[in-house]
Image 1 (cartoon, one colour):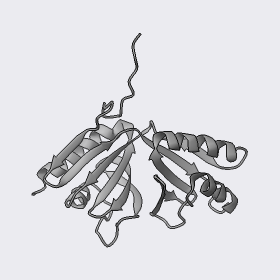
Image 2 (cartoon, one colour):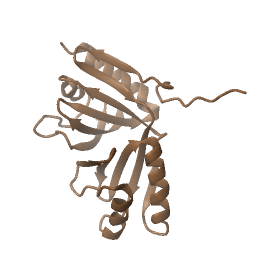
Image 3 (tube, helix red, strand yellow):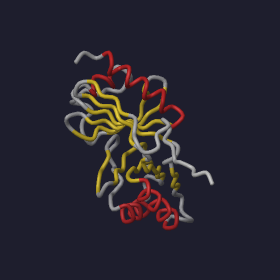
Length: 193
């Protein structure tokens, strides 16, 4: 009997794609758990349910994310957040939230198999990204704890700055994963070391 293997959008099974140049690193995050949560922005009771089940309060501030216990919750738009973490934990949370919010105006959308995550780290990570997006990624404007939606080349992306030295998580539609990988790799290749 043939065994099926889970493949990432870049074709990985258990080893992520990695590219390094100097102190900079581009790496595919294998099989991330991703969940989009949409609530009426004024409904505090629904937000309280999300906070209780996820163990973190969805952020009120635009373009910010919060972290707790391996989960991240990033602001996408008023009343809309992206939750990420280990795939199994996010899947269980989606089921729990779906049950708890049944019959309400909430929308819980699993995105784990629809998106790909690329992690860019190193002293030139910010410079690399700034060549590919119109988003203002200057250190004073976009620092650890910030997130945004923008373009990466011709692909839509969600991006988080998660640490210093710069660590950026870039999330794209899985159909654009290889395109995003090539853009980021080429941008790194031409940067002086």
